[in-house]
Structures are given as structure tokens and as C-alpha cells.
Image (tube, rainbow, N blue to C red; front, side, top):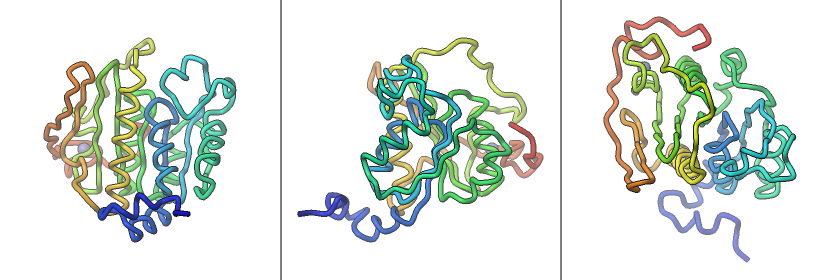
Length: 251
Ligand SMILES: [Zn+2]
């Protein structure tokens, strides 16, 4: 009879000490869609002690092609409730906190500091910027990701490193144009993005490897290429820059 985490004990980067660290950790998952599904499943399986689940949506049939934490029988249910049931069946040792609502600045500002690290996995670019701003303001690490079609990107921010706005909004003011209609997403592209987010969280919590800070990882599943490019912390960034304005608004 072996322990649930026996294969972790055999990895020098984790071992029993790392497993204890995971059990003592709390991770906030914002968005239980294509990215959040694999991230939640793997963090739960890995034995993270507490997972906070944030999503205001209900499961729709068109989600199931990529949001693998939900099942056909979950259509119409809250994504938080659906994901929580799957997580409980996978690993009943994980404590869950439920936030059946959309991520807003007010919601996050009151609770991100209760978590060791955040996984940002919402639908929209504006929401990713808002989550970035809340995490930077609270000094909480965050792993960002986005996916479109067969491509995606992943970036980790820690207090003092380049933030997500530094990577995408050179002027520090405006967001990128939002898509007016749903974008196509290959299920396995979201799976890769969410799994890489979980991998960043495990590195951070157990203290091994090099995080994707001050750079952004880009992947493309047509050529099956995976590479990173540097991201410079911008002095004029309104979120993290020294000449920027303190963040108090919604994005
Ligand atoms: Zn910044």
C-alpha cells in the first residue's frame, strides 16, 4: 500500500517536504473554463491543501469540448459546484472555498491576500488585466495565461517583476480591443496553457526551478513550438511602474 503522493516523494524537487508545503498552501483559481479545468484538476491531484474557486458562469454544452472538469450531466449547474464535485471525487483531502460569482475588483481586493498564489484563467483580456492589477496591489503572485485557437501564452508575476500589463499594454492605459464574438479554441491548447499554469504554481510552492517571470512563454500547436521572450518591467506602467498611478479602479 503506498501513499497517494508516493510518486511525488520520489522527485527530489518535491519529496515529502514539498508535499507538506503543498498541503499547507492555498491557491485561488479564477475561471473554471478551458484553462482553469486542467489547472484545478492537477493542483487538486497534487495535494494542494486549499483551492478557492471563482466563476459566475453555469456549464453549457459548448464548454465541454475543452472544459474537462465538467461533465454532460453538469449542464446548467454552477461551474463552481460542478468543479467542486469533480475535485472532491478526485481528492477529498483538498479544502474548497466557493465563490459563485464573477471576478470583480471588489471581490478580489478583499480576498487575494488570503492565498499564496493566484491562477488567472478568465475569458477576457480585460478580466486578466483586472486580476493582474489586484494581485500586484496586494503583493500576491499570479500565473496568467491566455489561449486563442491553437496558440497560447503563460506568464508569472511576483512582487517586483514585470506585470501582465507591462507585457501587453505598452502605453499603460488602454486595453487591447476585445473580440466581439467567441473565439475558437482547440481543447488541447487550453489544456497545455492550464497545465503550464499548474506547473508554475507547483514550482513556486515547492521552491524549485525557474519561474516564468520577466518573460512570457508562447506556444503554438501547429508547429508544436514552445519558446519564451523577455518582458521588460515598464517604469511608466500604471500597475507596477514607479511613475504609474496606484491602482484603485476596475482595470
Ligand atoms: Zn507592469
